[in-house]
Image (tube, rainbow, N blue to C red; front, side, top):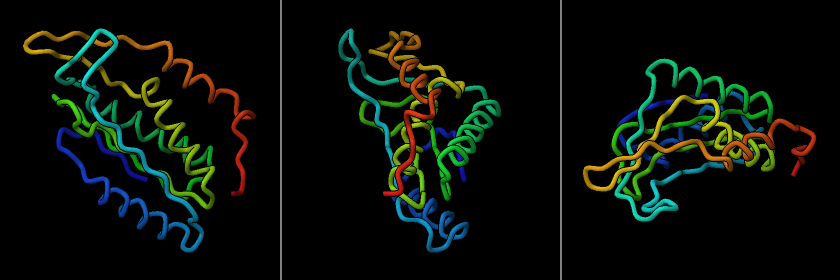
Length: 164
């Protein structure tokens, strides 16, 4: 497992290779799927165009919360390994903002693990976002849709794992 909260950009290819190496060390020959997700900064919100975002975090606490989330996903979905990188600071449209990867014996666990991490990240990892246009910026409030996405994971029976 690995996590990072950083200002610098990342290479999805390098992170995939790191995840693959860790999964192979932990469970050689038992990794049948790797799922990754890379999130980008959108150029608009419901109110119109934006030029980017600025993310703030609480150093130490944010990394710890992200680590706990990755550990939870690893246990919950029997992952061979998982990782997450989240950027902070000022980011512009189309910049990479987040990367999540899950390695598992079967594809369903890898997909569910990645979805769980992304859905829970906004609820359990302390990050604060401002959107900006020129010199004006606005703090972004939590969304009901993010709450609903996280709540669906509170009922594990609705996410039973397949062996496919």
